Image 1 (spheres, rainbow, N blue to C red):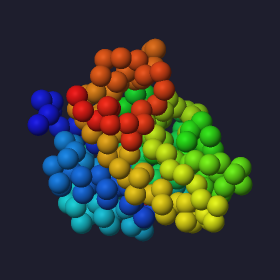
Image 2: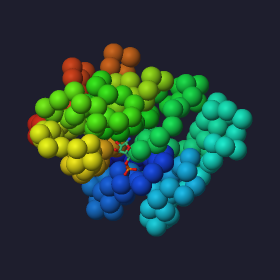
Image 3: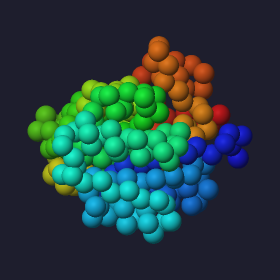
Image 4: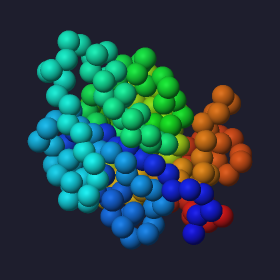
Length: 223
Ligand code: GRF
């Protein structure tokens, strides 16, 4: 059992919400000492919102079309998130670029999962780009969010091999369950207060990380 108060988490998701579901399932299994205080979306019909409702989590849908511009939307979104008093925000498939001013107060307290081995392939079409480049390995990264798109300090990654007959779809399908594991593990480390972003970089178990953690390196799993 963790000696820390349960981490209060808000999640943002635009789509099907399989990463969100993995977090909810891990919490329900007792493997993730967090409380979800809010799930918010820019898409009122996002399956992610339905998953949150089914899990009894408060939801918020804000449609960007009702706002004059990105800054106005993000200011409202993040003030509503702040009202739920999360310790941490998780971007779990939130498909919008965020306004720098809105996210600045959350530096070191906002994570994103991205389906590539960052710094490779920020942005979209990551699986297709990895195959086009004939990369022998692909993967996913969890990183702290900064105002650079998919560019913040990387906490942890998971790697998979590509195959000669892979399509972007087959590669994405093989990666997805590993993404879920990566996000759950990383959030658990944060909830156990093992990870922090400092001015020098990411600190894990009291030591500065020289490179992102590797999910499959078992030495990092035990303490
Ligand atoms: C995932 O591949 C995630 O890495 C990316 O968007 C996708 C979201 O999938 N940022 P889901 O909505 O969690 O199922």
